[in-house]
Image (cartoon, rainbow, N blue to C red; front, side, top):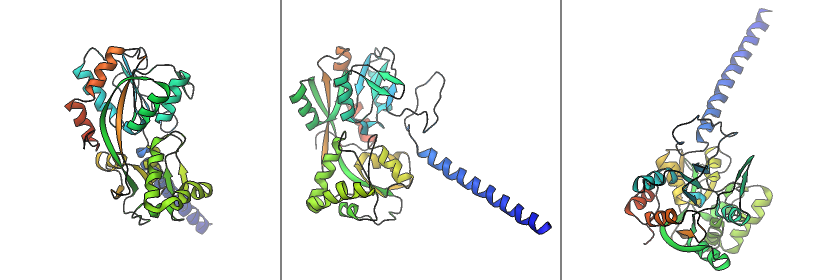
Length: 316
């Protein structure tokens, strides 16, 4: 009886230790979850990741004086950028920003609204930002924009967990069967086309097909459901081994948030550098605010914020 009690006590102690250990792991994983920007001041703060956490809608959704649709990979810049804009133009204090995939933002403009869970957002943007070539294509197809400004550039990189456990040295390694890849979804992510162009530069069509066809089918390539901020999270939580991302994604996680990730550089001959363009909508609800924001994006203050987060200047 005594022996059985001692064994039982050992089991309970072990279970308690395992529970504590699991709690630590879960806490560490929770710590990686977005939103990664500081919340707005005032009001009741309520966020329970991953159940109730809105990472891609920023600022004032009620009667905004300026609405900006940013390509999603700039989520980390938004807080500092909007605060600097408000300081330069104090007449604009209610600013609403979305940082969703540009394909989703374009559909939102076309349909007139975005539905996120139980929330419907029917705001028209004053400013739309995207890659330079995508802005040009949208202008050719739909004629949405009044004028544009180029404001930043960004090359590609590969993000891996700290220590690089799978020994990924370049893009060719992403075709290996043992390397789980997190890849932006080509259906709504412009970066996917650029990454695929890099795959072809590194290993021809065979590498591109291996990663984007064969490995998608067997599950070792994961296509993101949100946008490329999903890839760093998968690497941090051990769900993916490597993720081709804009270099600023890796820079933000590694240098700004000090997360346990590393950056694998892609050689220039295999790399692609995107130029980002801000466009003022022809039917902008707040025309003067849109003009002021477009002018602000070219200022030294805005450029310094982009440099802080690892972006390159618009002109080489």
